[in-house]
Length: 112
Length: 110
Image 1 (tube, each protein chain N blue to C red):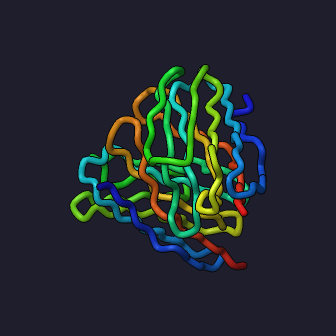
Image 2 (image 1 turned 90 degrees about the vertical axis):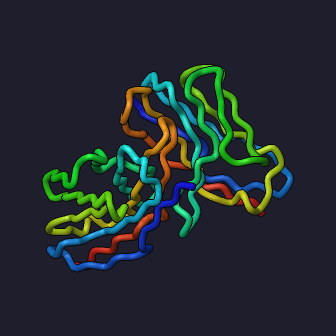
C-alpha cells in the first residue's frame, strides 16, 4: 500500500491563479480530510468528506473540493491569495470509531 | 469552541526524559492523541488515550491524562536525537472532527 499520496510536493502560484492539489489513498478509507499547517497555529481543518459523494466545509471561501470516488479527494484553490500560502496536509481513515488518521507528506504552496 | 494549546518549543539532552504538555477545552472529548511530524513528512500517530483512562504506557512513551484539569502530557523516556520532531496533541469530540494543538518542536541535543 502506498497510503496517502499527495502531489505536487511544492508549488509556487501567483495571486489570482487557480490550482488543484491532488490527494489519493489506496486503503479504501471512507473518511478523507484536508488540513492546512501554519507555523504557531497547528493544523486547521479545511474540508472533510465522510464518504464518496459527500463533502462538508469547515472554513469558508477560497477552497473547493469534490469526492467523486473513494480514492481521490482533490482540493482546488479557485483564485489563490497570499493568505493561502501554507503546507496542505491530506488525511484519511476508515469509519470505525477511533481509527487513526493517516496523513500524506503534504504540499508546500506559496502564493506570491 | 474547542481549543487545544501546547508550548511551542522544548529542548533536552540525549538520554534525558522529555515531557510535552497539552491543555484542551472540550470536556466531551472521547479520545486524545499524540502525533509526531518529522521534517518534510506528514503526521504519524504515536499513541492515544481514551478519556476514561488516567495513564497509558507504550515502551518509552507514557501518556498522562488529568480530565479534571483538561491536561494531557507525553513523556518520552531516554530521549534520542531521532526523537527530534514536532509533536501534536489532538482531541476528538464529535465523530468526524479532530482538533489539533499548535505543535511542540522537540530538539534533542547530543
